[in-house]
Image (cartoon, rainbow, N blue to C red; front, side, top):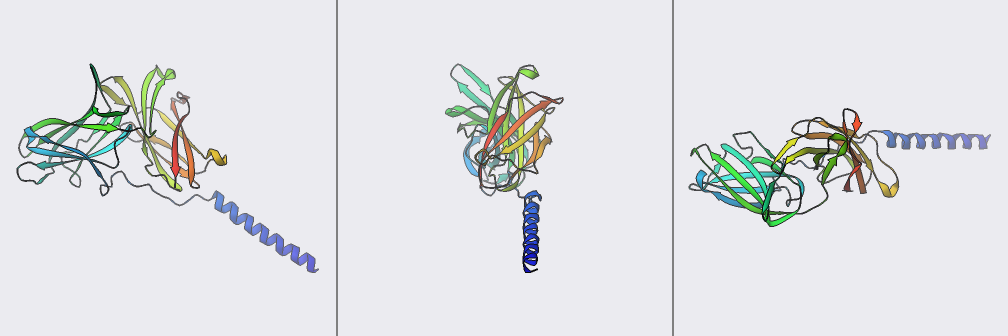
Length: 279
């Protein structure tokens, strides 16, 4: 009788522990966001230049040192006479690579806002390759509403290659040359992270268009432990070639995220991999 009671108690405890562990594994994790790209408190200064025609000085900031792939830029304009911040006007940028006898440009995103946000005009550049400060040049154009003047000047910049960019030729889509840039996560963490890529098609050395018609699938994998993760959300198109979803990392360590591109339901890319160091 005593043995029967002990056995019954053991079974109850075992079932309870098993059920708890199963729930812990199958339950969707708490939402955990990565740091926002719109957080301007930790920006670093990339450079500055005077735009004489607009009577302004341009200060260029970014969340990190410039890299191949997608880079958010924050530009602040200072009145050259008064030293006051200029919050009204039009700002556009271009990124040009000089390669001796030839040159080419990079995809850019310019805001249509005529009023700065938190004293910054926001833009973005997709650098398709590394380059030193004698090669890459950022060209900043500013139309000063108060002065009704404008001008363009450039600063020299360099780029590193952290592996957040893919240059693809898609044979199954008319041999399109496609740039795929990882926008986020910036700092991958355990739990759910925003996952965002931006896609551009190269038309010529100076013309790029955003790709809005693809479908994107992702699959995270921790190769060293031979497992993936549940509760991922495939990125869907939002605007201007951006596709936004969610990726879930269940533990710290080295992960890879497989990214696949589809058009009209047909897989058109090979398996592309972004490495993630999850903390």
